[in-house]
Length: 239
Image: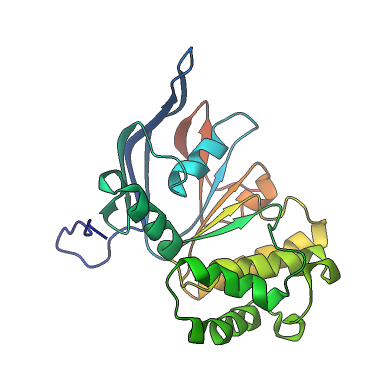
């Protein structure tokens, strides 16, 4: 990878640093989906981003997940200026340092839980000989050691989301980026997934959850709101 992390005398670089980041779709007419966003997420933080439909959450997710590049400002991931990277280097950085968890799970239905997690390592350079053991360890970590060989069609919604979380964790990313991770789950199952995220945070994982659900948002140790493409710090959300 051609870019190196920027340093400022400290080895504890933020996992995420957004500096006046904006994204404008060209149109016509042009649409400013994100506007001068500022955000710093330190290693080990658990933050949530909350906002109503149409507020810019999806665009924010795409920028932080390096799916879309901002049209203004700078986005540094682990101190690496993502705007200086070639497309291939951006893809490699995303695969190595960001673990994604989506509302819809996105599991291959005819592959076992173990195989679904193993497939995630095909794209990040993990040696073939190490993939099975690492996938098994990731599934055990999320409480699915007894369901390793099960197909997604034989798993409950909560179990499928745990497989998805194991898949996101298997590369040992810097950031766990979750998009409405409980959106397809009932209340009890959603609570168990949020407890798992709490456990991962307690183990030192950096977590960013994007949600419209205030009950989910309040689980973060810090909450940021987004409205009309603008981020702002929010006081602790209480029920």
